[in-house]
Length: 119
Image (cartoon, rainbow, N blue to C red):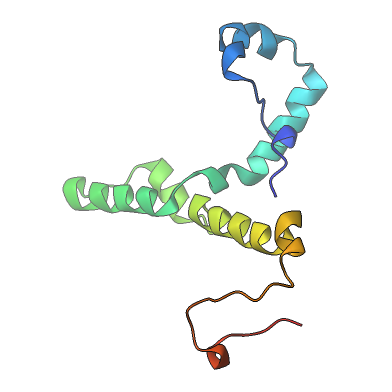
């Protein structure tokens, strides 16, 4: 669901000692491309509720909220939890192996009349 190549640099664990060299070999065009994309989705890697709790703690404890917390309070984009659920939903309905099993009857442990059947 997420095209990590569009916003991240992925390396193998064995390549960690060469990380600086790998990063220095990325050209400016690719850096700009990845930065532009990561700016669009960075909030999908944060737990919004934990930020809101920290802002509330600051307000209660210090009667002041830091600027970064105020900025987060204004965020309405999906966070990591929502993204995780979206990925699971996508996989549930789009994984090739699951599509092959679609013809099988699945026992969900619920009365049949309570299930929505997709034809």
